[in-house]
Image (cartoon, rainbow, N blue to C red; front, side):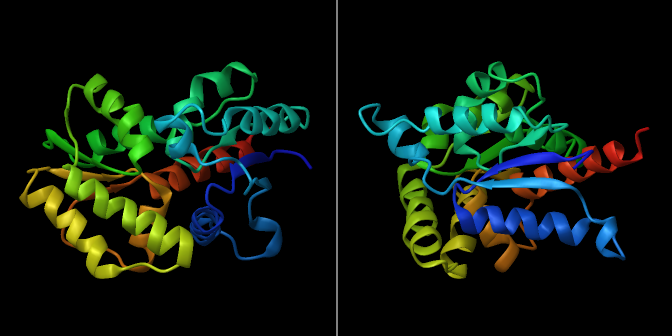
Length: 237
């Protein structure tokens, strides 16, 4: 296969399926041959990223992710995508292991916020406890000259319940809880825009969309960037 990219997925599987679904939906295709060439690595057994970030005595996801990157690099994809926000804790190690470009989802999300919401100053961040702890979004927001707005402990507890108890465990979205979390980030934390910094939250947005609060859906933004790069690749000689 020529002119293809590789998706390092499976973290979690339903969130990866959401990413693939949106990517295929947005591809301007009217025949089988007009869809994108890609390889999906659905590495579902990668250890939990948040557990490791919070407690380094827990199983380390990095060896599994490095194995995927090194195996796939031998096939010479044009680029990699990593549709898991928390896994970007390991981004520098993963990129250092290959010459193939790896899209940085949090960085692309902040760039899109600056483009789409130029007057926004206070940027709310939601995600797993691992993503909040590793500051992968906080650092990107601050580097862009914007003010990171973190959830309270109560909001973070609600977010973890939604991600783990509802979506990961039961593949269900509690719409009331999801919308409540976003509303709290705006009314209590006074965020101008709220980043959906977990692909399970992107799954919630896909199934139970919030239409009134400005959100930056990291997975949706990654889909757009993936599509842009893949279409350029297809057009290249």
